[in-house]
Image 1 (cartoon, one colour):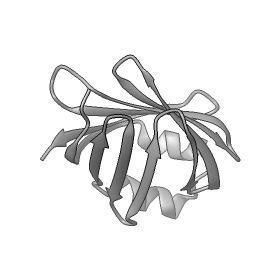
Image 2 (cartoon, helix red, strand yellow):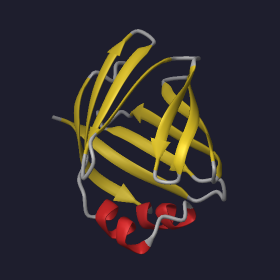
Image 3 (cartoon, one colour):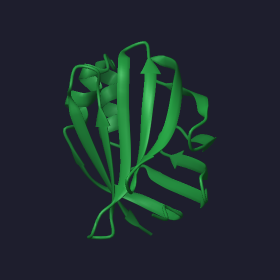
Image 4 (cartoon, one colour):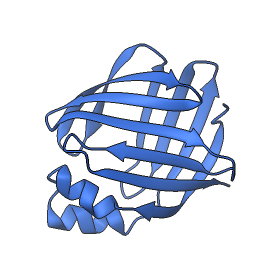
Length: 130
């Protein structure tokens, strides 16, 4: 599945509860829940570059199957990206435990980013192609 392109945030389900499960403080949760991020994704086979433009711009480059370091609100994390069918899956070792984020493009043409906290709290952020 090709993820190439610019994606704008259009809808979110359960984001504040997810942030609470991640021990994100009240002020930061309010900022995060009131932003509409854009994701700029460049995919070349199994190599990716994802730039997220929001209150804070963040860029990460990785190759499927190779572990890489990333920065999350709780600190540095180790991430391994894999394919799970057509889903781009991120297994994340973090100070808050094992996290999982999956991105997939569904039949409606939108990209769904499902994030799962270590305690089982799940959030879905939906993006439409610009």
